[in-house]
Length: 115
Image (cartoon, rainbow, N blue to C red; front, side, top):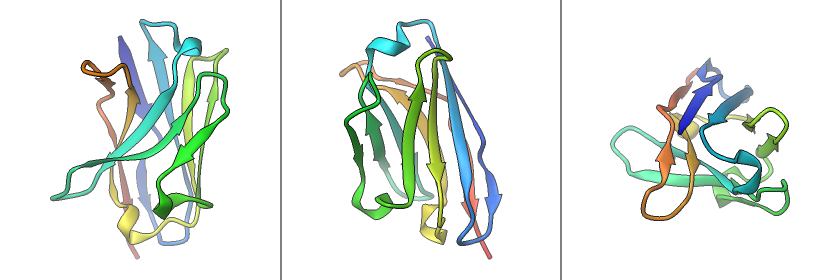
């Protein structure tokens, strides 16, 4: 199993980034997927979840109406569109295949929001 994230970077407050995660080694189209993040000095937290078909979705309250999770099952790719970014969104973002006790994690991509 491989989960490879990309798209992170440095952006000013109010800016946008689009994260991507290419999945391989399992039947991506059959599984719900998650985005997590870990800010400096804090634990990992669930940001968004998407079902195998793309609906329904779930968002952490602090990112609702700013972030959009989506997927392209033809490309085995998960996305996270992040708009109106805030300094407090600074974190390493992880793509996760949530299968319980043996969740699979990507290597993460750094998102830094700074003036």
